Amino acid sequence: MKLATWNINSVRLRLPQVARLLAGETPDVLCLQETKVINDLFPAEALKRLGYVHQAINGQKGYHGVAIASRLPFTSQSSEGFCGKDDSRHVAVTFENGVELHNFYVPAGGDIPDPQFNPKFAHKLDFLREMTALFERRRGRAGPVILVGDLNVAPLENDVWSHKQLLGVVSHTPVETQLLGAFKASFDWIDVTRSFVPDSEKVYSWWSYRAQDWEASDRGRRLDHIWVSPALKGAASAHAIFRSARGWTQASDHVPVLATFDL
Image 1 (cartoon, rainbow, N blue to C red):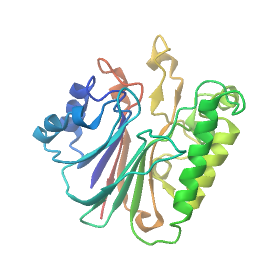
Image 2 (image 1 turned 135 degrees about the horizontal axis):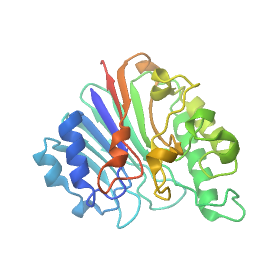
Image 3 (image 1 turned 45 degrees about the horizontal axis):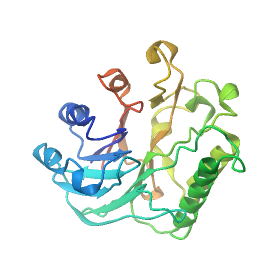
Image 4 (image 1 turned 90 degrees about the vertical axis):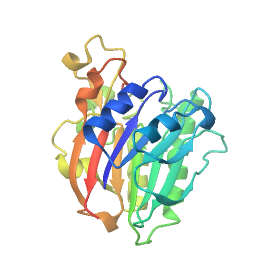
């Protein structure tokens, strides 16, 4: 099973880029974040024409939104709410082969890394805590689970262009990386990217629109993740971060992350 995850930053605006990825990489499953569209206006028919007829959509107008489009059928789908809000930030499906897939879009958290002065940052921290509690309740289940999405945290020193300079910047602050670490431990998650790329190497999936030349400055962060439960340890046979997509016309500031699993 080949899987791609991508914060598309408006699926209707960037449908041609989605089609380009699907034609070139032919993943079995595509997970999108920040679709920014209500369910009724999601480009479902366009994706069906591309072969992705099985769809689980959790969207809202103008903001957030997650979706799973698949060539493989699934037997169930669901979504969770977090922090007492109606934000569309999670969708999950279970495939016929028993694999459970969760697609998340964690809040970005605004610009000020202080929950007392920045409600958006407080929301992000609470969201991470609630994710941890959700999976702690399920700890010990032996089934195969995959978690993907824009988690909006770059947890390791080499997940950012400068560890020292970004310690006070939202997405790499100690409180965020500690909470993401607690979430990872809650279900004994395995970070697929770092199974292929050593911790000592720099690797990114996001480059800001603010950079005049994103490729030359290369001030990136790894915000997009694919994790698996212990039942899938060693199942990933291939992995790629599709860096070239950042240079496409009308590109998202995130690029797709892909993994192939032998199941």
